[in-house]
Length: 442
Image 1 (spheres, helix red, strand yellow):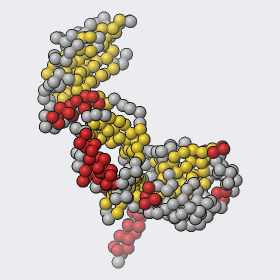
Image 2 (tube, helix red, strand yellow):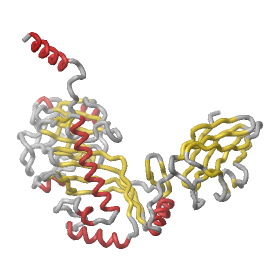
Image 3 (cartoon, one colour):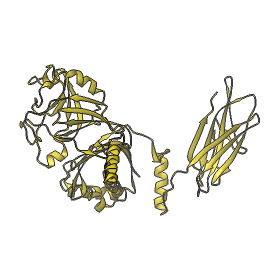
Image 4 (cartoon, helix red, strand yellow):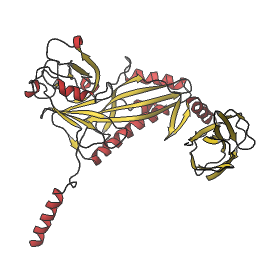
C-alpha cells in the first residue's frame, strides 16, 4: 500500500510540473509549426472573446472582449440574430459614409465572406455579417448584444487591425473552441495535403477521373456544373501538350467538417503560364475530402519557377526542357545541385571548390571573376574561355565536373582586388543550368 501511495504521488507531481501537460491548439490552425507564419482570428461566442493567433505560437498574441449575436446558436437564416460559425475571410474595409446608419458600426468594419461555400451547400443564408467597432463605450459590456456581427470597441479594433489582411487573414468562429494536440493537427494536415497533392497530380497528368474526383458533386465553375466542367477540362487536355502546376505558400485551416486551403499557384503549359492565389473550400464527408468551391486571384507575372528547394529556372528554359523530355519519352531533368564549398584567394590565383551532387554526370563549369582597381574593372576566366563583358561568348568550353568536390583555378593580378566570382553550370547540350554568384566583402 505504501508503494502504491508513492506511485500515485509521483504521477500527481509529474502532471503538475511545468511543460509536462501537452500543448493544446485551436483545431483551426492546421499549419501549426509548419509553413510560412501567418495570423488568424479565433472567436469563441460562449466566452465572448476574440484571440489573435500565430501558427507558430501556442498561446494567443492578443485577446479582446467582443459581443456577438443576441440569440445563441449557429446562424441559419437572414434576421435570426445569430452569429455564424465556420472559417471566413475578410474581404473589404468599410468606413465613413460606406457604413450603414441603421446601427453603431464604429469607425470601420471588416466584411466577411459569409455565407461561405460550405454554408451555402448546407442551406445557411444571411448577409451583412461583419467584424466592426462601436462608438458606444459600453457596447461590449453586454454579451450577446448584436444582430449577428462580431463587435469590439473602437480602440480594440485599432489594435486588431494590424493583423488583418484582406483576402488572406481568416476568422474562425466557434461556439466553444475545439482544441487539439500538435500531433493530432499534424495528422490532419498531412491528410489534407495528400488530398491537395492528388488533385494537383491528376490535373498535371490529365487524369480526369482523379482530377474531377477531387471535386464535390455540387461544384460549379463559371456557370458550369461538374459534368460541364469535366468536358471543359477534357478539351483543354487535348489542346495542351503538357500541364505543370507548382504550389507554394500553403496555408490550411479547418472548422469541424469544413477545410480551407489558400496557396500560391504557378501554372505552366506549352502555350501559356500564369501566377495566381487560389482559395479552395473542401468538405469532409465519409472520410473523403472534396472541393466545394474555388476561386483564383491573379498575382503579378513572374519569369522563373522554383522547381526544387532553392533552385530557380526561367519559365522558357523549363518549358523547353520539359517538352524535350516529353518528346524523347524521357524523365524531365531536375536542376543540378551545385554548391560553392570553398574560395581561396592568393596574389597569383583564385581556387574554388565546387561540389556536384552524387550521381550527376555530363556537366561542366565556367568560372568568371570580377576584379576592380579604382574605377577600372576586368573579368577573367579559365583558359580557353572568351568573355563578352562578364559572360562567356559561348558555353562550348569549360571544366568537366565529377560528382563531389571539383577544383577550379582562375589567374589573378595583384594590382586588382577581387569583387565577385560567378560560376556558370553547363549541361551536355551546352545550355546554362544554374548560375552561382559569390560577392567578396571588401
